[in-house]
Image (cartoon, rainbow, N blue to C red):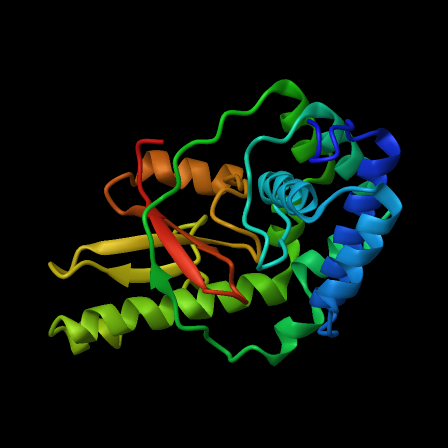
Length: 257
Protein backbone atom coordinates (compact mmCIF):
# COMPACT_ATOMS: atom_id res chain seq x y z
CA UNK A 1 0.00 0.00 0.00
CA UNK A 2 1.28 3.47 -0.85
CA UNK A 3 0.97 6.64 1.20
CA UNK A 4 0.05 10.09 0.01
CA UNK A 5 3.72 10.66 -0.79
CA UNK A 6 3.43 7.85 -3.35
CA UNK A 7 6.13 5.83 -1.60
CA UNK A 8 5.45 2.25 -0.54
CA UNK A 9 5.47 1.35 3.12
CA UNK A 10 8.87 -0.25 3.67
CA UNK A 11 9.67 -2.80 6.34
CA UNK A 12 11.37 -0.04 8.32
CA UNK A 13 8.27 2.17 8.04
CA UNK A 14 6.05 -0.63 9.29
CA UNK A 15 8.40 -1.31 12.20
CA UNK A 16 8.10 2.35 13.22
CA UNK A 17 4.30 2.62 13.02
CA UNK A 18 3.68 -0.76 14.67
CA UNK A 19 6.24 -0.05 17.38
CA UNK A 20 4.67 3.32 18.12
CA UNK A 21 1.18 1.78 18.26
CA UNK A 22 2.40 -0.90 20.68
CA UNK A 23 4.01 1.71 22.94
CA UNK A 24 0.75 3.66 23.07
CA UNK A 25 -1.18 0.47 23.85
CA UNK A 26 1.25 -0.42 26.64
CA UNK A 27 0.75 3.01 28.20
CA UNK A 28 -3.02 2.73 27.90
CA UNK A 29 -3.12 -0.69 29.57
CA UNK A 30 -0.90 0.62 32.35
CA UNK A 31 -3.32 3.50 32.97
CA UNK A 32 -0.83 6.13 31.81
CA UNK A 33 -1.64 9.24 29.76
CA UNK A 34 -0.89 9.08 26.04
CA UNK A 35 0.03 12.18 24.03
CA UNK A 36 -1.35 11.09 20.66
CA UNK A 37 -0.19 14.25 18.94
CA UNK A 38 3.42 13.71 19.97
CA UNK A 39 3.33 10.10 18.87
CA UNK A 40 1.87 10.96 15.47
CA UNK A 41 4.43 13.70 14.91
CA UNK A 42 7.24 11.25 15.63
CA UNK A 43 5.86 8.71 13.15
CA UNK A 44 5.43 11.40 10.49
CA UNK A 45 8.99 12.62 11.02
CA UNK A 46 10.60 9.17 10.83
CA UNK A 47 8.52 7.69 7.99
CA UNK A 48 7.83 10.80 5.93
CA UNK A 49 4.18 9.78 5.72
CA UNK A 50 1.24 12.17 5.94
CA UNK A 51 -1.50 11.96 8.57
CA UNK A 52 -4.06 9.96 6.56
CA UNK A 53 -1.75 7.08 5.53
CA UNK A 54 -0.58 6.80 9.15
CA UNK A 55 -4.16 6.78 10.47
CA UNK A 56 -5.11 4.15 7.89
CA UNK A 57 -2.17 1.96 8.86
CA UNK A 58 -3.00 2.31 12.55
CA UNK A 59 -6.51 1.09 11.75
CA UNK A 60 -5.02 -1.93 9.98
CA UNK A 61 -2.91 -2.64 13.08
CA UNK A 62 -6.12 -2.51 15.13
CA UNK A 63 -7.65 -5.11 12.81
CA UNK A 64 -4.73 -7.50 13.20
CA UNK A 65 -4.65 -7.10 16.99
CA UNK A 66 -8.42 -7.68 17.15
CA UNK A 67 -8.10 -10.95 15.25
CA UNK A 68 -5.26 -12.09 17.52
CA UNK A 69 -7.31 -11.18 20.59
CA UNK A 70 -5.64 -8.08 21.99
CA UNK A 71 -7.20 -4.76 23.00
CA UNK A 72 -6.79 -1.87 20.57
CA UNK A 73 -6.45 1.91 20.76
CA UNK A 74 -9.97 3.29 21.16
CA UNK A 75 -9.69 6.02 18.53
CA UNK A 76 -8.33 3.63 15.89
CA UNK A 77 -11.17 1.35 14.75
CA UNK A 78 -10.16 -1.71 12.72
CA UNK A 79 -9.60 -1.44 8.96
CA UNK A 80 -9.60 -4.84 7.30
CA UNK A 81 -7.30 -3.98 4.39
CA UNK A 82 -4.08 -5.11 6.09
CA UNK A 83 -1.52 -7.14 4.11
CA UNK A 84 0.98 -9.88 4.90
CA UNK A 85 3.81 -7.41 5.50
CA UNK A 86 1.85 -5.67 8.26
CA UNK A 87 0.80 -8.97 9.81
CA UNK A 88 4.46 -9.97 9.96
CA UNK A 89 5.47 -6.66 11.52
CA UNK A 90 2.81 -7.02 14.21
CA UNK A 91 3.84 -10.62 14.90
CA UNK A 92 7.49 -9.62 15.33
CA UNK A 93 6.65 -6.84 17.77
CA UNK A 94 4.34 -9.02 19.87
CA UNK A 95 6.95 -11.76 20.04
CA UNK A 96 9.35 -9.24 21.58
CA UNK A 97 6.74 -7.99 24.10
CA UNK A 98 5.69 -10.82 26.45
CA UNK A 99 4.76 -8.24 29.10
CA UNK A 100 2.21 -6.73 26.70
CA UNK A 101 0.54 -10.12 26.24
CA UNK A 102 0.19 -10.46 30.01
CA UNK A 103 -1.12 -6.89 30.36
CA UNK A 104 -3.66 -7.54 27.63
CA UNK A 105 -5.27 -10.15 29.89
CA UNK A 106 -4.88 -8.38 33.23
CA UNK A 107 -4.02 -4.70 32.83
CA UNK A 108 -3.63 -2.29 35.73
CA UNK A 109 -7.04 -0.77 34.97
CA UNK A 110 -8.76 -4.11 35.56
CA UNK A 111 -8.20 -3.88 39.31
CA UNK A 112 -10.25 -0.68 39.44
CA UNK A 113 -13.28 -2.39 37.86
CA UNK A 114 -16.37 -3.01 40.01
CA UNK A 115 -17.09 -6.60 41.14
CA UNK A 116 -19.60 -6.94 38.27
CA UNK A 117 -19.54 -4.75 35.17
CA UNK A 118 -22.90 -3.68 33.63
CA UNK A 119 -23.15 -5.33 30.21
CA UNK A 120 -24.83 -4.35 26.95
CA UNK A 121 -26.11 -7.14 24.71
CA UNK A 122 -25.04 -7.10 21.05
CA UNK A 123 -25.46 -9.33 18.03
CA UNK A 124 -22.76 -11.93 17.33
CA UNK A 125 -20.17 -10.73 14.82
CA UNK A 126 -20.02 -12.02 11.28
CA UNK A 127 -17.32 -14.69 10.72
CA UNK A 128 -14.03 -13.15 9.61
CA UNK A 129 -12.17 -14.64 6.63
CA UNK A 130 -8.74 -15.89 7.72
CA UNK A 131 -5.91 -17.41 5.75
CA UNK A 132 -3.41 -19.92 7.12
CA UNK A 133 -0.91 -17.26 8.19
CA UNK A 134 -3.46 -15.38 10.29
CA UNK A 135 -4.53 -18.63 11.94
CA UNK A 136 -0.89 -19.47 12.68
CA UNK A 137 -0.31 -16.08 14.35
CA UNK A 138 -3.49 -16.48 16.41
CA UNK A 139 -2.34 -19.91 17.54
CA UNK A 140 1.17 -18.67 18.30
CA UNK A 141 0.05 -16.12 20.87
CA UNK A 142 -3.08 -18.05 21.94
CA UNK A 143 -4.75 -15.20 23.79
CA UNK A 144 -7.87 -17.32 24.32
CA UNK A 145 -5.96 -19.78 26.52
CA UNK A 146 -4.29 -16.95 28.42
CA UNK A 147 -7.71 -15.45 29.16
CA UNK A 148 -9.26 -18.79 30.12
CA UNK A 149 -6.45 -19.45 32.60
CA UNK A 150 -6.65 -16.05 34.30
CA UNK A 151 -8.94 -16.53 37.31
CA UNK A 152 -9.41 -12.81 37.95
CA UNK A 153 -10.58 -12.06 34.41
CA UNK A 154 -12.77 -15.14 34.31
CA UNK A 155 -14.30 -14.26 37.68
CA UNK A 156 -15.14 -10.74 36.58
CA UNK A 157 -16.84 -12.03 33.43
CA UNK A 158 -18.84 -14.63 35.35
CA UNK A 159 -19.95 -12.10 37.98
CA UNK A 160 -21.01 -9.68 35.25
CA UNK A 161 -23.11 -12.33 33.48
CA UNK A 162 -24.73 -13.43 36.75
CA UNK A 163 -25.73 -9.83 37.44
CA UNK A 164 -27.07 -9.42 33.90
CA UNK A 165 -29.07 -12.66 33.95
CA UNK A 166 -30.57 -11.84 37.35
CA UNK A 167 -31.48 -8.33 36.22
CA UNK A 168 -33.06 -9.68 33.01
CA UNK A 169 -35.28 -12.10 34.90
CA UNK A 170 -36.23 -9.53 37.53
CA UNK A 171 -37.09 -6.93 34.87
CA UNK A 172 -39.37 -9.47 33.18
CA UNK A 173 -41.33 -10.23 36.30
CA UNK A 174 -39.46 -13.26 37.61
CA UNK A 175 -37.57 -12.09 40.71
CA UNK A 176 -37.96 -15.63 42.08
CA UNK A 177 -35.83 -17.00 39.25
CA UNK A 178 -33.45 -14.05 39.45
CA UNK A 179 -32.66 -15.00 43.05
CA UNK A 180 -31.65 -18.49 41.91
CA UNK A 181 -29.06 -17.41 39.32
CA UNK A 182 -25.62 -18.38 40.66
CA UNK A 183 -22.13 -19.52 39.75
CA UNK A 184 -21.71 -23.25 39.17
CA UNK A 185 -20.49 -25.36 42.07
CA UNK A 186 -19.60 -28.93 42.90
CA UNK A 187 -22.41 -31.22 41.83
CA UNK A 188 -23.42 -29.11 38.84
CA UNK A 189 -22.77 -30.42 35.32
CA UNK A 190 -19.08 -30.15 34.47
CA UNK A 191 -18.30 -27.54 31.82
CA UNK A 192 -20.52 -24.62 32.82
CA UNK A 193 -19.82 -21.42 34.76
CA UNK A 194 -23.30 -20.10 35.58
CA UNK A 195 -26.65 -21.70 36.39
CA UNK A 196 -29.49 -19.52 35.08
CA UNK A 197 -33.02 -19.89 33.76
CA UNK A 198 -35.34 -19.02 30.93
CA UNK A 199 -38.60 -17.27 31.69
CA UNK A 200 -40.31 -20.68 31.48
CA UNK A 201 -38.02 -21.91 34.30
CA UNK A 202 -35.99 -24.09 31.92
CA UNK A 203 -32.36 -24.33 33.06
CA UNK A 204 -29.53 -22.53 31.31
CA UNK A 205 -26.03 -23.97 31.65
CA UNK A 206 -23.93 -20.97 30.70
CA UNK A 207 -20.27 -20.89 29.76
CA UNK A 208 -18.73 -17.42 30.03
CA UNK A 209 -15.84 -16.44 27.74
CA UNK A 210 -14.32 -13.10 28.67
CA UNK A 211 -11.90 -10.82 26.82
CA UNK A 212 -10.72 -7.23 26.95
CA UNK A 213 -10.48 -7.33 23.17
CA UNK A 214 -13.24 -6.84 20.60
CA UNK A 215 -16.06 -9.01 19.34
CA UNK A 216 -14.02 -10.81 16.65
CA UNK A 217 -11.32 -12.06 19.02
CA UNK A 218 -11.17 -15.88 19.01
CA UNK A 219 -12.11 -18.25 21.81
CA UNK A 220 -12.55 -21.99 22.17
CA UNK A 221 -14.37 -24.59 24.22
CA UNK A 222 -12.70 -27.00 26.60
CA UNK A 223 -13.37 -30.72 26.21
CA UNK A 224 -15.77 -30.60 29.15
CA UNK A 225 -17.62 -27.61 27.70
CA UNK A 226 -17.94 -29.20 24.27
CA UNK A 227 -19.11 -32.48 25.80
CA UNK A 228 -21.76 -30.61 27.78
CA UNK A 229 -22.91 -28.80 24.63
CA UNK A 230 -23.48 -32.18 22.98
CA UNK A 231 -25.09 -33.80 26.01
CA UNK A 232 -27.38 -30.87 26.94
CA UNK A 233 -27.81 -28.78 23.76
CA UNK A 234 -31.23 -27.54 24.88
CA UNK A 235 -29.70 -25.94 27.99
CA UNK A 236 -26.12 -25.14 26.95
CA UNK A 237 -25.39 -21.48 26.24
CA UNK A 238 -22.30 -19.35 25.67
CA UNK A 239 -22.02 -15.72 26.73
CA UNK A 240 -19.08 -14.02 25.04
CA UNK A 241 -18.14 -10.98 27.14
CA UNK A 242 -15.88 -8.56 25.26
CA UNK A 243 -14.41 -5.06 25.46
CA UNK A 244 -14.84 -5.50 29.19
CA UNK A 245 -13.10 -2.26 30.19
CA UNK A 246 -14.59 -0.28 27.31
CA UNK A 247 -18.24 -0.48 26.25
CA UNK A 248 -18.53 -3.85 28.06
CA UNK A 249 -20.72 -5.89 25.73
CA UNK A 250 -21.66 -9.53 25.28
CA UNK A 251 -23.35 -11.73 22.73
CA UNK A 252 -25.11 -15.10 22.95
CA UNK A 253 -24.39 -18.39 21.15
CA UNK A 254 -26.15 -21.71 21.48
CA UNK A 255 -25.79 -25.12 19.78
CA UNK A 256 -25.47 -26.26 17.09
CA UNK A 257 -22.08 -24.71 16.46
